[in-house]
Length: 461
Ligand code: NDP
Image (tube, rainbow, N blue to C red; front, side):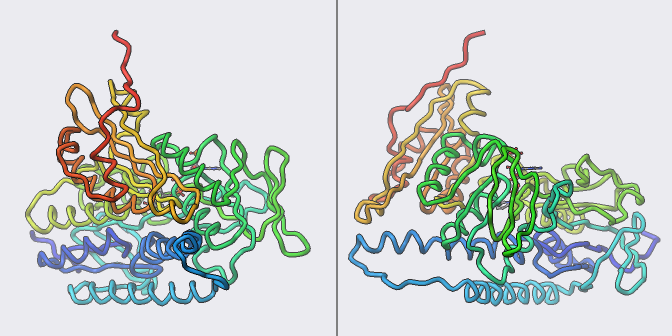
């Protein structure tokens, strides 16, 4: 190539996808720079999956304490200290942030701790230094940001998942808007930690898009733990009262008096002000960068990975996309990420692990045998705590192929990882049946269910 550039690769955004792409490209011998305007690690590490999971663990002790009594333990006097949890969480996030920075440095990646924008197909402006550098390839890995409803009077009183990790005080009462991953996970966290928690959702059941039987059980179990649900409703106004509380008015005419209102109504691709459109990059309706199977945008030298492309918005997917990009563009090995059959978990309480089709999707596609067991897990027997688990396997009768597996209960996320392998490999129900049970576990249900709970058949045309 006759042209010379300051860098082979300039990555904008040092989150999961950007960091992986930068490191792998550098390992392939590329001269790489990365810019991050907030903190290295991105949403997942700094204000997403990782701190969320730590808070889920904290909230889970409520169940453990309750279970403990039936097993002979006395836990009288257990108290919870929000400030200690937040400080310890911050300490852990600082440690991970340092590891991420160190890994970039070790890989020889030049790090700019400031905003960077696109100035052309090969030009990136480093905002803090007021200069433009050139790069043969630019990778946009800026992730997403929480949606807000700016038309809502008083919306500025509400927090999002950006602020929730840094609250100085634990709210005594919280109202959470939304029915997706974040709303459900934080409803479980706050409720478990003793906050009076109300989830307000505009439709009739949480976790739209997931298996209906699983969604229903999760909501029932959350209700049994104390979470209040308001369905078919949305906020119409938030106002600060004299006593400092927030008065939240709902469309139904109902009002909630709470200490915090949290919006968890989705996330948007972070492309605003990045200069992409001016550089010729085509964006989708929500502002997502439109890319091909190699994460290449409409401008051949500009690529994008992770949530900014709004494909499957999960950390491991962003990491895979970043790695595949680096291998393809700098490693001489074309890699295409398979976005099908991505297992995932919702760290609700109870936890939810899932892979493949839901019962509703499977039934819409064709015949399906539904193997489903809802039962009280052994742990809850001595404790006497009300708790139900769900193990569900969806099978296509003709091929015997397992189309989807859904688990609600302890360890469901861990199970989803392993079930993901089986389903991805194309396992059949006979393969499940031929696998010896691990006893006594809850998961043994997955290989011992012999009779379908339902046989759903499509009408013959
Ligand atoms: P989701 O897209 O999962 O859910 C958004 C929720 O907000 C839906 O219930 C939606 O309702 C509702 N909503 C949207 N707009 C409005 C509105 N204007 N007024 C009222 N309600 C509204 O988004 P989240 O914010 O929960 O999470 C964002 C993404 O982050 C997820 O899609 C996921 O990819 C990722 N994530 C993954 C996690 C994990 O893997 N465990 C954990 C947390 C986040 P409706 O159903 O009607 O559209």
